Length: 390
Image 1 (tube, rainbow, N blue to C red):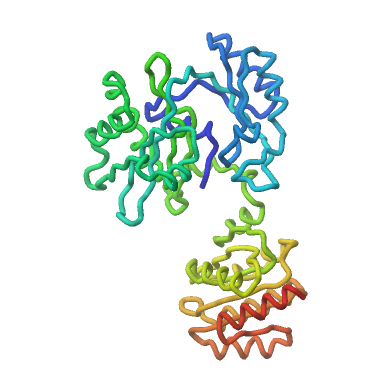
Image 2 (cartoon, rainbow, N blue to C red; image 1 turned 45 degrees about the vertical axis):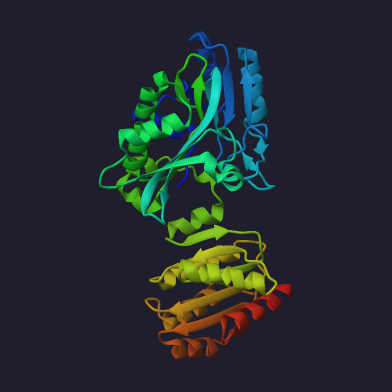
């Protein structure tokens, strides 16, 4: 689950991590009041920042500086309600419905800090780089040595000496190192206590007077741990998510919308990835990732069908099931019921293997519906690509 920058900064404040003063606004009146509060508090510059779940906001016109209340109001009117297009939103962009009105900072250096779970080592890794304010993926690709890493032993936690090592590698002054240790320790505590899967401070800044601050913050939470954090679940902004993905989450379906025209229904994430690959290999384009899971029931499968058919781009459906916990006959029964209930008119191609596969194939054959089946994934992929092309 992703959250907004202003929400992430509230979490950092609770862990004694320094962030600029600021308020969230959903209307121009709220934005004006927030800006006035900052100017009245003695700040000379106010930053108006679009709040969407995507990076690159500044390049897209979603971040503006204001040196007066009038400029802050003008910037707020320009940004609030705009369709902000960045490299992460795609060409359709994302409508800005919230602003963060924040105090400006006298930036001396822009650095980078990040925490992520490294699956290869099964440890949390704390990353740092002198290349702040840039896309860290580009830095990693072009100059991997520019990213410093400290792997954290889960039995020990993030040790002060590791924070000092990163601070010295970033070139912080001796006077800043002690503050950096507190700053990084606060980040680590926030990461662990919220069951985060990603936490990025980009940029992590030093100011002209030698202070440290998180100028921006991105946090992603581990969805599987949210049952422990009811307060974090309330931070979810469904307006930032695809409506079909929101609907799928209500039925415990793992769905991600894509740009193609062949809908996929698969049990198992690995098989779903392979299914999308073989559709591409056969000359088609997948419309989604959909993992119904190993224990899907008829209701979930019917709901999955409804979600797939809600995408107007879909021209054919590819159902690729390896029956284990989810028996093939149960799947076939649910598919037939869903196809009849929803009056599905587009082609459906199936590739079925596993427990009770013969019974499942008989259910499909006796249904009176025009299903196509492939003996192999490649054969089924060729069939569905041809069907989608009409």
